[in-house]
Image (cartoon, rainbow, N blue to C red):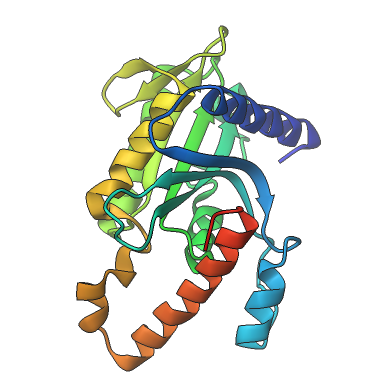
Length: 231
C-alpha cells in the first residue's frame, strides 16, 4: 500500500474509534486503536514461553472489549478487528489490493489470545456496487469453504461519514457502533475463533492440543494486562 493509502486507512481507524467510543454501546467495557502488541510486552512473553521471536508484527487496528455476561471464558469478550481500506483504484486492472487483503493479519491474532476476530473492509464511496459485491462473495466463499470462524464485514464509506453495509445482494445504512454491536452478537453466539477453550471442547482434545490451549490462555492473560482489563 502507498503512504497515502496508509494515511487514509489510519484516518478511517481513528474515525471508527471515535464514533464507537462516543456511543454508549451496551456492554462495551473498553475500546483501543492500533494496539502494538509486540512493543507493549506481548512479544517478550511470547519469546519467553516459546523460545523464538514473534514471526510477525502484531498490531490490532481496533480492540473491542465487551462484558461477557455468559462468562464462557471469563468476564471479558476480547475481539480484534482488522481494518482494510479500498479506494476507487480497485476497479482498475492494475490494482494490487485483493479481496483477501487483511485476512492473514486478522488470522494471526488468533495466537495472541483474543476471543474473536473480525475483518472489516471499508470501500470508498467511489467504488461501484458490483465491485463491492464481488469482493464480498469472494471473501465469504473462502471463509465458508474452509470453515474459518471469522466475522467479515463489508462497508462503503459515504460522503457524510456514515456507512452502507453490504449483504452480497443489497446495501443497508449502518454506523460503526452498529457494526461493533453486530460483531459482539456474532461472538456471543459462540462462533468465535478461540472458543476452542470451552471446557466441553477442551476435554475432547488430545494432550498436545490442551497444552497449546494453555499457552494461548497465558498469552490471553498478558493481552488483558496490555488492554488494562482486570485479570
